[in-house]
Amino acid sequence: MRKSYRVKKEADFQKVFDQHNSFANRMFIVYKAEKKSQPHFRVGISVGKKVGKAHDRVYVKRRIRQTILEYKPQIKNEYDFLVIARPITKGCSMNEIRENLVHVLKLADLLTN
Image (cartoon, rainbow, N blue to C red; front, side):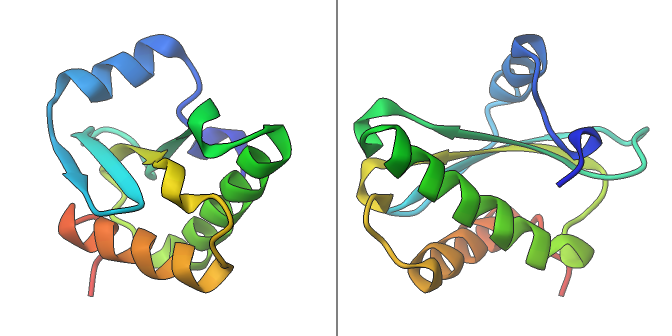
């Protein structure tokens, strides 16, 4: 995923958190903020230390990024959103991560169908 599709700065993360639009299931929490003037969506991914050691966190982040790339054409362009992984994601398969992430993105109304 290109850098232009990522929320990287702490100030940008805080702007999304301040909107208080959160949606969750047992594996993920998604915060979203509307930004009408941008050409495409931006995503920030946060996997905390409670998920596990560094290699566990990288594993989960890669699975989240891959799922977002697969659903990229269906994600609405006018949003910044953050995906926060809960500790239960450690050791889950790609299918479980994909199903739960798609579920929470649908709850947040970020996918067009």
